[in-house]
Image (cartoon, rainbow, N blue to C red; front, side):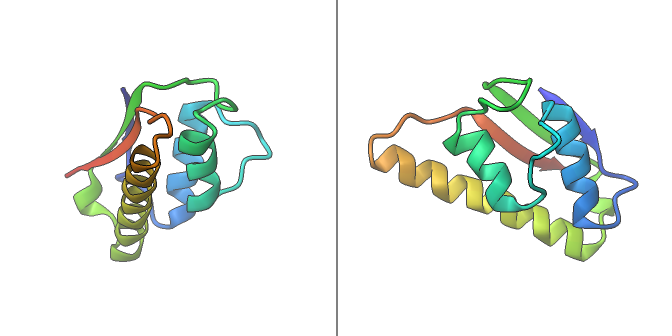
Amino acid sequence: MVQLDASGWREPSDFYDAILKALGSPSWHGSNPVALLDTMVSGMGAVHDLKPPYCVEILHSAQLPTAVREHIVGVIELFDRVRGYRRNRGAPDVDATIIMID
């Protein structure tokens, strides 16, 4: 389990800075939902120092600015959709999740 304290986040880039650091991502990693999805789920975490299974818990998410919270919710929903699509097609599932804890 990885816990990220979101209490000081003001922009979506704060989320990416924190999660990429926690995962031990390479310096070239993109800071957007698709790049995160590609490396955490589709790439099965191969480029990160931290390998699945893991859960990223975002603490103090109730305090986030609306735009940041909505962005992270969108990332979580994208992960859920793609993981479901992969399972339905018989692809291996990757136990790498992100959740928000108020």
